Structure formats: structure tokens, C-alpha cells
Length: 267
Image (cartoon, rainbow, N blue to C red; front, top):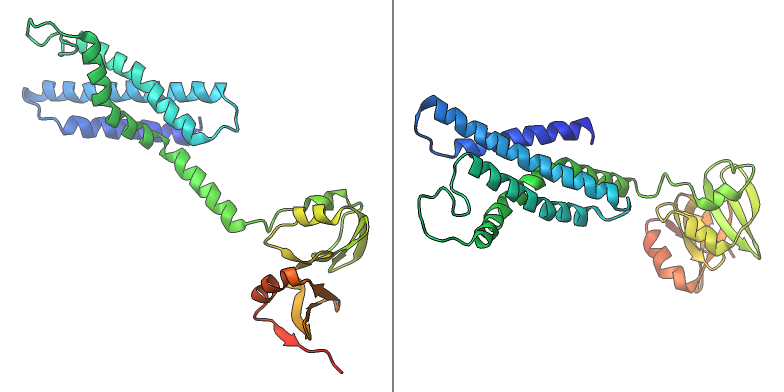
């Protein structure tokens, strides 16, 4: 684990122990008070250590692409059993009443039933502490997802660019299907590439542009205006090319470029 996460675990364990210890009413002087704090510190350290050990073991065994939340839930549930066993044994060693022992009664007790109740009693506290220990991971995951969402696909390199040699220069404006080839127009050059148009469209980020015709893809930033000729719609690009818009894409195009100027053909 990273050092920052280890530091967080230590801080959370310490704070949880201090909070639980301070919430108990203790009589008997300084020694009794100190013993109470020491008890809760040891108890929380045992709990945190067992959970982190179980989590680490699970992550070592499973595939790296397994969803994180099911792993965390499984680690919390699985670590509850050894934690309950450890704390029960710890309390018995200290002479505290557990499982019917040290309670001053001679009544028969069901050890299994009493242990089951211990699992139930400790469950909510265990879940809360484990969740606090996982907080850095949870926050990091949310942060990374938020960054990826904000950045979108702008910085992604279209996969079909990798097949073009030498690499294209400039920013892409327009892709046109021409039989088994695609004609790629950038701000610096025009190139023919042996590539399926459908694959090129699939590889292009949605944040950069859109398909407007069965044979044309355009970059948003390349569009200068719309050209309406009767029922036909075309796009004027900044490189002075004109691209037709299919009926199936017309609604999307008009909505996307509603702020662009609309021209009519000169007669």
C-alpha cells in the first residue's frame, strides 16, 4: 500500500480508539483510565490489521480487473469473523465477560449462540471502521473518474491514426469515405489511408466531431456555417469544403450547430 494510505489507516485507527475510549465512563483513577484507552487502542489496531490483511490477500488472489466494491464488501465480511474471534479471546484473557465466561453466573450458556450475537453486535462498528479505512481509495477512485469525465475524449489519439505513416500533421477537420480508403483532411494536409470508414468513425472521439453523412465525418471546430438548398442541408467547413448532411443526421446537425450562420445558395 502507498505510504499515504498507511498513514491514513494509522490516523483513523488512533482517532477511532480515542473516540470509543472517551465515550466510556471510567471510575478508578488514572490507571483505570489509561487501561481503558490502551484496551481500545489495541482492539482497534487488531481490527484494522485483520481487515487490511484480508483485503490485501484478496487483491493478491483475484484478477486486477475485478470490480473494486465487491472486493471491499467481501473483505469487510470475511475479516469480521477473525476479528470477532480475536476480540473474544482478548476479552477472555483480560477476564472480561464473554460467551458466558467470567459473568459470575452458573447458568448454562450456548457458546455458539453467544458467538453469533457477538458477530451481530460487532458488525455495524466493523463496517464503519473499515469504510473509514477505505476512504482514501474511494475518494481517489471518484476523483479519477471525475477527471476522466471532465477531460472526456479530447486528448485521446484516434486509433486509426496509428496506421498512417508518416504521422498526419495538424488537427483533423474532415474524414471522407472513398471505397476502401478514407480521405483525411487536416489543417496542414490531405491524406488517403487504407482504412474502413466505419472503423475510422468508431475510433474518433465523440467530443471532437460527428458523422453527418454515410460517407462524411467532420470536426466540430471545422464547421463555419450551414448551407440550405431547398430540402438539402450542407456544412461549410473552414477549409472551404462543403459537406452534405444526410436526412438521418439532419436533426442532430441542426441542433448541434444552431448558433452557426445559415446561408442560401447564390443564384
